[in-house]
Length: 214
Image (cartoon, rainbow, N blue to C red; front, side):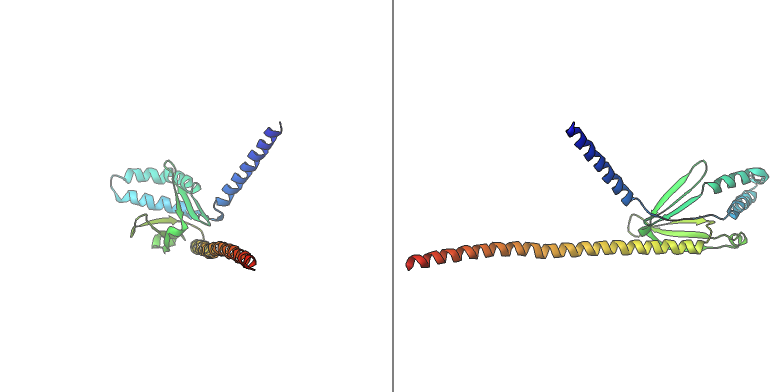
């Protein structure tokens, strides 16, 4: 009975340690971006006029402007999410086919703004992310439109990226220092102890020989 209790306690402690480790490793959310409601109107207008340009799309554009576009833009807007943590930038969009991407902050090379005349008309801006690819010299561009206080959000991203780089550089420097100190100080001390023991034994032998000669 006691053995079962001890195992249960050990299992409980192990679960607590595992949960604590998972919580420690989970990203810390810094900021959740909010999107401008005018982005819905921008979607209806921009997509509708794109349909009007093509002759085949003209009938579809009439249906779009008569209510389908408003329904679609409302649901699209409600599903938009963009979350900045201390290690990643995650965003999700889409209705029927949802796209969710998570970008490590260390892969973000640059964050820029795109503001055309139509975007300025709706008080909107597009944030463009240039991210490093998996192979050397490869880069990908991703963008988000309609974030409120886009300039502040850009500054938060860059600040989080620099904080992450500084943190990892500090960890690497500490690990190198500890390894270097431990490697150079612990090994020679053991060698010195062996030498001192040998010298002590030799001195004892010499002392015994001198006593015998007397």
